[in-house]
Amino acid sequence: MEMIKRPRRLRGGQTIRKMVRETRMDKASLVYPMFVTEGTGIKEEIPSMPGQYHYSLDQFPAALEEVAGAGVSSVLLFGLPDRKDEVGSSAWAEDGIIQRALRLGKEKVPELYYITDVCMCEYTSHGHCGALCGHDVDNDATLPLLARTALSHVEAGADMVAPSDMMDGRVAAIRKTLDEHGHAETPIFAYSVKYASSFYGPFREAADSAPSFGDRKTYQMDYHNVKEGIKEALLDVEEGADLVMVKPALSYMDVIRRVSEAVTVPVGAYSVSGEYAMIKAAALKGWIDEAAVVCESAASIYRAGADVLITYYAKELAKYMDEGRIG
Ligand code: PBG
Image (cartoon, rainbow, N blue to C red; front, side, top):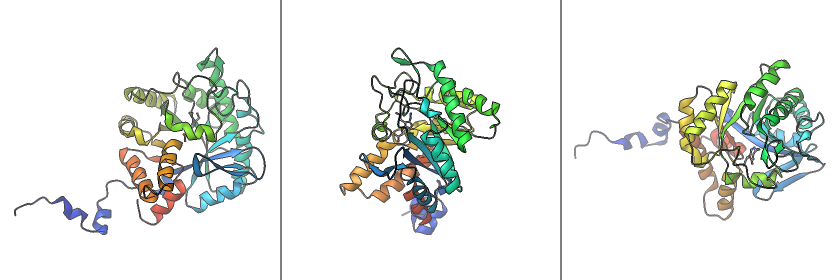
């Protein structure tokens, strides 16, 4: 039989398959999200996210050691404050949970790179991502609150800030404030293309940040749209974002692809709590091979165009990369 082109030739063994791989991954591109809480002696598993925990500060350094030990070089921090109010003032408090977690982390585990989520929803009594005006978030009144929060994170030691609120103009506001205070070198990782998604369900339980009324659709994006996502990403780059993010990841591969082709900054993808919970639940039932599915999902996110992957499976993925299962 005459057949000159046989694609299977390049799949004949592991060595040749690895040689011609189109997508290469590195654990340096993994970011691990973590939740810190007030209190002591707390290492509490999040019910809808088995394997993920709330840590009080006394437990936090050991958890950070574990992340660093797994070969993951950066973390993304979320805080659970002990008091909430209308404007979320504990988000920028000098002795706020994130600020103390940063000072502690930088002291005890300085080799990690600390990124902070900048948003008001964990800190406001109503659970929305900013100050309210009637029943909606007041965009322009929220900008100074976000800028102030970002600055307080950087002053407490954050290496990078990641605004996730989806207010218009927040990257410019944060950039200006950081620059005015001598932090021109601190990068901004903007959650630029963030959809109003049901995949955040487990996170909102974990962060106690569900809105007490309504939803986030007046600020987070409609999942029918992709051009709008490119607009958001380009706007954030213009305002000074150093990296942009698409979130969630698995249902938004087309968005990752389009955004990565439209911008010249690195693109992050956040594989969110609901994605983790789905894989974990099926794995616990014995219905899927967890490690294999985690590898396949991660590779597909990179293949779609992500340069950085934020994932609750970061520690496992670092191990799989070391073992050569993927990479
Ligand atoms: C804060 C924020 C959320 C997530 C990251 N930052 C929740 C939300 O917007 O409701 C979701 C992360 C996840 O689901 O893993 N605004």
